[in-house]
Amino acid sequence: MKLTGNNLKLARGSLEVAIAKAGGVTALADGLGITHSAVSQWNVCPIERALEVEKLSGVSRHDLRPDIYPREES
Image 1: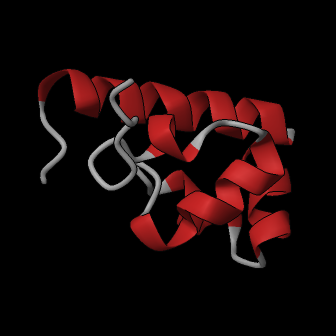
Image 2: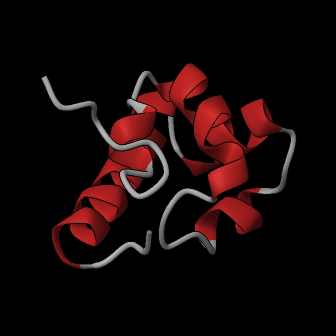
């Protein structure tokens, strides 16, 4: 699945929220053990970082990467 349309908007917005909830770009980067410039280059959360970002920020993996972690239909 590819991030397009509403899923892309959700993923981008969720990354911004995650950064804010983690305490900013530098705080998130420190928590991930990477440079702040690496985080600043993200347009969306990288797949391999989604679970770590979820843990550090409290923002759901389903929102960070809806293409990889879709919500289950109820």
